[in-house]
Image (cartoon, rainbow, N blue to C red):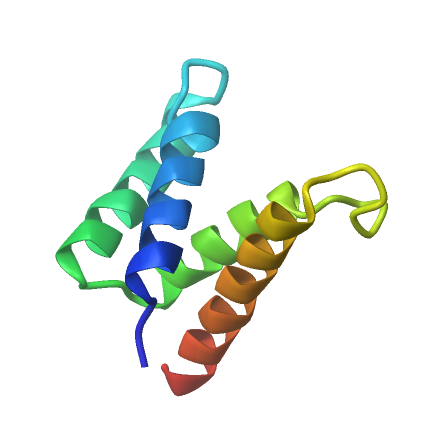
Length: 90
C-alpha cells in the first residue's frame, strides 16, 4: 500500500506550508524536509511516517470538525488512516 496521488499532494502541501517554514527550529525543519523529500521519492521509512502522522494529527481539528471544512477534514483523516496502515506494514 502507498498513498494515493491526492493524499500525497495533501501531505506535501501541509508539510510545505506548515512545517517547512521559518517558525520552526532548524532541527525540526530538517526532519520534516527529510520526510518531504522521501515522500516525493517514494522512499519513506518508519521515522518519516511518524513525522507525517504527527503533522496530520496536528492539523486535525480538536473540535471534531465543528468549525472546519468537512471535505478537508475527511481528506486529512483519510491520509492519517493511510499513514497508520503504512506504519503497521513496516
